[in-house]
Amino acid sequence: MEKSETALKRPFTRWRAAGAHLLISACVAAAVLGVMLALWYPPPLFQAMGGSGLALILVGVDVVIGPALTLVVFRSGKPGLKFDLAAIAVFQLAALVYGCHIISLARPAFIVFVKDQFQIATVVELPPERLAAARYPQYRSPPWWGPVLVFGDWPKDFAEQQQLLFASLGGEDLQHFPRYYAPYEQGKDQILARAQPLSEVRRVEPVVAKVIDAWLARSGVEEQRLRYVRLRGRNAWVAVLIDRLTAEPVKMLVVEKV
Image (cartoon, rainbow, N blue to C red):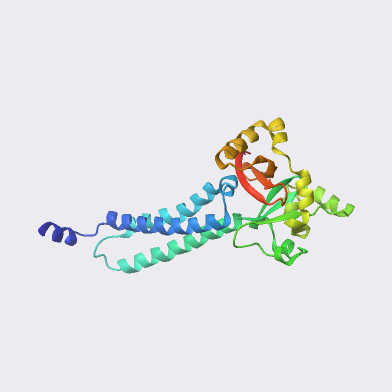
């Protein structure tokens, strides 16, 4: 009994305070990051889009800074300690909001089928004026509940084709222009025409085929019902296996780093 009373009376040192702050901050950051990644970066887009770097931003600005400041300012019985801790909490909340904002800008907004592969358009790559020019109203704002699959309808007008060609010289392509977005199901026939049977993948892309075959062995899915389309991420290529009848994605597998 005496030992427990002594433990309760023991001063709350700066190390204990910083440790408690670190534990709380880590739990909050993990919860926020988990929700954002589940909604905005469904597997394997987290890996393909360099999500680990984005996670480090959130951890760095929130989990590390707050406890470090507590370690510096905390002293049991110090006058004005409550004000100092409140100021740290406000600063840490602002850092958390900033980190979430950065991650939200880098999140995939649309997965666009362009020519013969999927391309990702992030929020930061889609200025408001381009979104406003979208033909379909559902594409005039970035979705908040995960990336939306769309079909990139290549323009038939020669002048527009030339504009896209010039844009490609600056590193942009059709996925950066929502006015060419169309509902995914509208392009089903073109997508299936460009998709490859897995037998062809084994012949021309053996590295990709190895990854796909490993998944087929684990999943038990019949390969006859699948077709293959590539997806280019910021950090890695992804093999997208689509249904051969509906063109809907069945599985995405990270294949190799870009």
